[in-house]
Length: 494
Image (cartoon, rainbow, N blue to C red; front, side):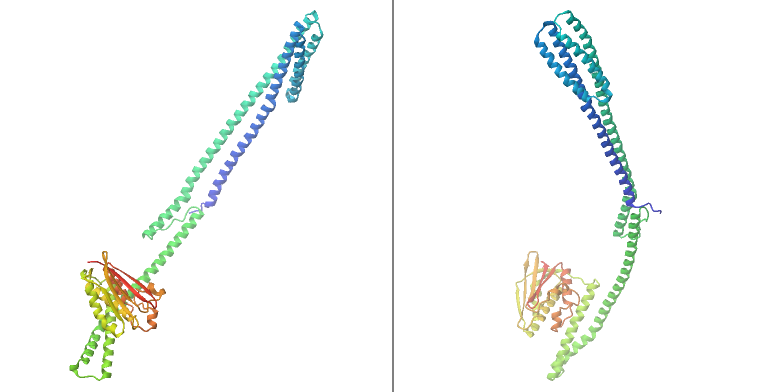
């Protein structure tokens, strides 16, 4: 498939367009704000103040005309005072009007001020004439004409300023509408780009990644044949190629593991077959050795000298050890072959303990190890009597074997809810802390046992744990080196 670019390029182009739109929207809003501020400034700082100044000029001339008319009719000096006040206000209004006026309005303002000046000159002549005289009447008629001319100019300027204010107001409205429409269009464009980008991202990024995730889930479920499609964006292609390479490597490793597992299983089966064959082949001559050693010790076959008797005892003792080893190996082979089964029934664990203690008592006496039993029967338990007897024999023989002279071995058993708890505690050499995790491994022997040349095969506890597990029970070991070991077994109550 052709290279469709990279994720970075796709996202960069999209974000670049969005940034341009955002900057454009900001620039549009800023430009509109600047233009709007200029229009507002012109309206509030020029047109409206100019209109107010023009209103004041018209008001002062009207007030002065009213005061002069009153004086010419009544001769009241108070009216002259009002006339003078209006004249002072007019001068200030004219100054404001000239200062606020622009070049475009200078001619119209000057024309209005000239007509106002003509009226003020007429008013000054009327002021010095006698009230109600012919001269005063003539001046009054002339002043009325001049007053009307002034007010027409004043009204014309006021109308022009009002029209200008309305035009500026409409311009502000147009700017606001235009800005709103522009920003709205930019927003719509940004939204459209976001939608398109989302669809393209889903098609070119999200969908391939989801397909890869589905492929990984299928591989986890056992479907190892699938591979990711190498297509699309550069990064997606790289991920797909890496995923396929990892899948190929995993398949290669799995095939190697299967080959190794098959070889190990074949070796394990060969070892089990060998152990079974050897054990069976050794059992027959070993039975003959044990039988003839018994016959040699029988007084009816003729007496033995003391050296001969000791040699026969050595033969019998080692034959017994070999028999135990063979039985352990055969049991282990049965366990590995899945042939080891427990025939469960209700048994009195107290009787099993009593028989086991009876069998180990001679060995304990010979090793000068004291045996203590704290068991009160009956203790009904659900189990296989022969196998439980083997558990007790293995635990007790280990306890006696690993306990120095003058040590003690204590057996306790009691009902514990729906379980029967059995413990065998000794004051022997214990187990090193670092070796406890391997305690139930086949053929495991603690270093202190090897160092002290204590005989054993390392199969006893592995067999014990299997038997206890088949009974639905648990086994725990609490041991401290040079202090002793306590093995606790819990079995279902009968």
